[in-house]
Image (cartoon, rainbow, N blue to C red):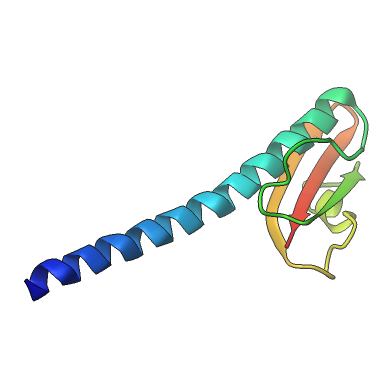
Length: 100
């Protein structure tokens, strides 16, 4: 009986780990979708809708590089990111960062 209980605990722990991984992956998906929307529109702006598990959102734009667009997002270096998305538009890179 103890062996069975151990397996049940292990399964519960695995489910918790996979659930946490799905949430963080979802935050990246949400950020990527928002960045892609900005790039498609050709405008740096806050796109409405879900913020995943994030509480704050920063948007940025750069003609130099994707990394530069991320660094230009509001709150960068001040809050902990939970999701980052970047998309290339006709005139540069658009970034969305979701923060804790």
